[in-house]
Structure formats: C-alpha cells, structure tokens
Image (cartoon, rainbow, N blue to C red; front, side, top):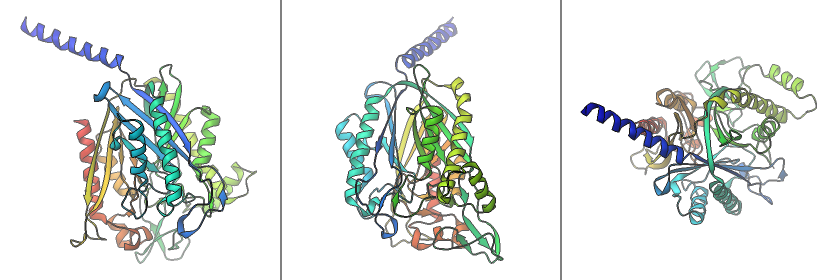
Length: 441
C-alpha cells in the first residue's frame, strides 16, 4: 500500500510538472538592425571605406523558458562584423557597450545573458579602430536586442544537421614541412612542385536551429557553418556571402523568416578553393551565367549550397518541434596562459569569456578566437549534446592554433597573429566541455 501511495505521489508530481510546462511554454523573439555605416569608416589594413556594396545586419534571437525571475533567459546577437571588441584589444568595448544599453532598457536581463558574435566579414568596418562607428553600431544592435526581447511570444524549436561545402582548410604544407596559409600574406599553392598536403580537417556540417510560432509557422533559422565570410575584399562595405544567403532563403522561406548566422570553429578555414579551382570556377559560371565578377560568383555558389542545406532539412523539422525544450545557460571567465607558443610566466593571463547554452538536446558553446578547427572538433567529439553548435569570434580574440600548425609556421600560427598558444587551446577545450557536462547533469 505504501509503495502504491509513493507511486501515486510520483506520478501526480509528473503531471503537475507537465501542467506547469504547458502553462509556461518557451518564448521566442526575433529582431534585426541595419548596422551599415552611414559615412566612411575604418577598414582592415588601415584602409577607409569608399562605399557600400551590400548592407550589414545584426540579427537577434531572444529565448526564455520558465516564469518570473527564475526563468532562463538568453539573447544571441549575430553581427556582420570582423570581430566583437571586448576589452582585450585597444579601443572601444562593443560587447559591454551593447550589454549596458540593453540592461538599462530591460532591467530583468543580466549582462552575461547577452551573447554577441561576428561572421568575420573582411569587408566591414574595423570596429576597434573606429570609435564613432562602434558607438553607432552598438546603439543599433542594442535597440534590436530590446526589440527582440519585447517581441518574444510562445513558440517552439527544432534542430537538425545538414551539409554544405562552403569553407576549406586553407593551409598548404610543403614537402619540407613548411606551412603556408593560402590567401594571407604567406602565399602557397597546391600546384607548386613542392606541395605535399593540406594541413588539416574540413567541417562541412551545417547545424540548424529552427524556431516556430504557436501555430507551427516558421519564424527563424540559426545557421551555423565552419566558414568565415571572407570572399569579398577591398573598401566596399559588404556582408559577404551572408547577403546572398539571406536573399536565397527569403525567396524560399519567405521574407519574414529571420536568419541568424553563426561561425563555427574555423581559424584555419576559408572560402578559398584549394583543389580543382578551375572546375569550381567553371561550375560557378554555369550556375550564374549573368554574373561576371569572380568574387560574386563564389559568394552565390556558397549561398546556394547553404540555402539548399537549410531547405532540405526543413521538412524533417516540422515533426520534431519541441514546445517546452530545456533551456539552460552557463558562462565562465577563463584566464588563459599568455605567450606563444608556450606560456610566459612573466606575462599576465589572457581573460576570455565562454558560454555554453543547452536548448533541448542541442548545445551552443562560444569562444572569442579564430579557433583552429581541430579544437572545435575535440569539443564536438566529447560533447554530451546530440548536436553541438560551435561559435567562434564571440569576442576579439586572435588566432588560436594547434601544435601541428605551430610546427608548420603558417600565418595563423605565429607570434604576430596569436596572443596564446596550443596550451591555452587545451584549457579552452577542457573549460568548454566542463560547462557542457554541467548542463547535462
């Protein structure tokens, strides 16, 4: 009899929990802002912008689960920028400026619940060197974040995995072991007589998070790829291939569906075609016969591939919508050892902020670096989540290379481009996994 009473109490508790979940569903809010400079702005390499090729966008996704002060809240903000200044570089601190503005307008939010990230377009203003632009962009980003928070309504999420060949490992290694990052200051070529191999792995996964309103209508998609937006060069402001991705998906999904780009671990990846370049260029011309500009052809090719991945996974997502997904968030400041390639005891540590967010059985984990892919793969391989969305450049970190990259001496693995070395990468991987495992406990 006692066991029966215990069982009844247990199942009544479950029923009560279900009623609470049904009464307080997940809430989702979207918004975006145009952060295209209104005048001339500082660009990378000391240049100044000469015009606008296509607009820059900040896209915001606000999520909340639970009720009242105890509810879990997180805001993701993706920006068509090279990086997010965070105080670790001279100049303005866009991350904290945005957070202060948002929290001032929405006091129930905490600064650490607001996560900014960059797509790493090389054709955006260099925010750390242009205080006027940074203030302008911060104000508009914060306004969009507040709007997304106020826009949140009951909804659901579903997550899935697609694939698209967008980025390639861009480090060519000679027979003598010397590595060269193609497309950087060190020029290398797979067609050179001394070429031996491509240094590392490539990640063609497209991690996707779809959001839905309570009627089951698609409201937005998070699109996570291991490829920086680096096709476009020069002094014309541009969002790079994400401009074409937005256009492709607007045509397929409708203009009201929000698209939030995320850049996965891709410090050694780029849009550069390393092998079969002539064949790829021919296919680009066949696909887009009215386009003659070589960079625009590549942008359109990448965009179509990403849009195909989003569209092909979408039909499977309608049957697996979760209306009350687990939402949990942990963050941590990690003091990484400064020095390259080894820590220098005489130098202060390099503080970084990392976040781990659980959404149902999917995870998102951030870092501020141009993180070499191997580090991201180590986190994905050991993550407790079904899917793990890696997010790099959620800050202003430099390259964080692997030991084999340092041995090869390529551009992204030298003292001039790094503030920390592979030992710091080990600590970053361990800290990320610790946060993820805590979320699943």
